[in-house]
Image 1 (cartoon, rainbow, N blue to C red):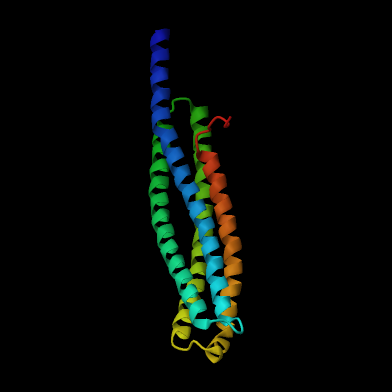
Image 2 (cartoon, rainbow, N blue to C red):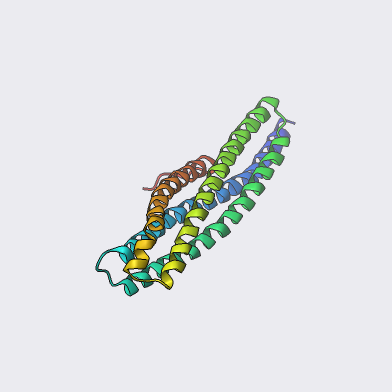
Length: 208
């Protein structure tokens, strides 16, 4: 009987190991990928600002500088698309991970252990919800900023001269200020993504 119980317990633990760890690690990998993409986006954003300021610089080759600005804006748009796609993938894996975790909790017989599992899952859910709100706020700010970038681009495309640049100076300044605020927000969000990823990923031995 004792031997049979041990075999059953081993089988149960194996099921949990096969089901929960890969899903947690898979979700963690997606969060890490999102963090890396956001950090890259911050660099791209800085490139948009740098090239736009180059257009406004006195004595600049405006046509050449504007072409670089357009290229930077296009890279930003492409990166935005990748981030949105990655975000959808994160949401799918997150939902799958939490649902599997919930199902595994139901299979735990010990009430104390089950309660601990529920508490740990609830803690992760709260952190992910907070992360989602943080991301939504950042996305709203980014959308406003990117609208300004697109408007300046359209404006200067047909009025690329010192007078045109001067007349758009207030919006160019707003693009600069918006980018500074976004870069901080992106850094904070990427940092939180890394923390949650570390918290739910299966531990690995230290590299030798």
